[in-house]
Length: 502
Image (cartoon, rainbow, N blue to C red):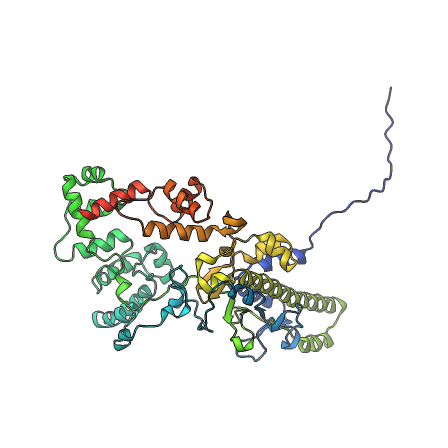
């Protein structure tokens, strides 16, 4: 029996979500930081003759720039000024529950000493004001101190230039942690040149500066007067065992008695693990803020103003005059179609940049409003928050909020934070109140810092203490939070206390 093969025409209706190339590009724009966006726009300007970058010196306002340099109309009714959002809805409600702050700074510097403020012991933004006695002497930075020595010790311009570059690579503790091969590739010189120069720089004051790690820093100080012995070198190479209080293992590696290990441990306590600590502090800022947050004076309503960072935000315009001129000289249909396509692409990019700006401002403003307590009073008042909550509040998809908050940094009076930082899990508290996991971590650290050396708190003890305070965290949760803070266990802390007595 043969089967007959036939062809039939059938209509079927179904829905599919298809992302056009422009939609895919818009998603990518959301994920980019301001600096990444600059590179993208530079590439677009190279291939599209109708796009022009607006220089910072141009007086075109603060927000995204539309055609001919005019600011695009605000899409959000809450926009108070170009590129900024106000967030002051809950100020009265919050300040009715906690003591109000009268002298919060209006301005901030995301790389200043204010970045250190944020712990529960700081209740005011005035904590960074210098003491009266500090005003009697001028503290210089480590960089200035080292540059003065550099110009006295070196005479060849190449050595001075290279030395200046290495000084600028020091972190806030005075360490040079970058690999020599990486520095060699960046500076365009041989690794032996950098190595020889570093050997001389490591003799600069303060001793220990330019060290690659803690062991080398301590070794430079320890061996300043007399060369290090083999046992001392082995001891410094195994500081991890010292942190774990594995004295017997250290004694075996160093080929010396345990008593000698205790002596060496006591000796390095007198050394300075942070050579830069004696100088005016400086922050090595590896990220630039995409968003800025500033205090609004109380006579203007109070609250916070959130705006995009105009210093890092690239701005473009569509040059319609150039388009009209070139269109008038177009010789054929193909050239006209090319110009029309470029004009459409340029218009789309400007609109996409504006939509990106509005989305970032919406999300950042909502986060600032929700975390008002953190910005006023510190980490103890950080609220638990999820992507879904913010997405529902600003009427965006959860995935959009996730893209907006990834890799975006906000400069605040408490320092520089990635927007992801503010999304924390919740811990159940008394009377149904939920607490941020960051707040619980802060409380655990406070309890451990204040513990009696004769009565070291175990994880069970910490969990019980938190429970009495209305914070219901299991012992495993406490242990996980303690480890995330890099705090040793109760056994290791007890050993450390006993060593301190000896």
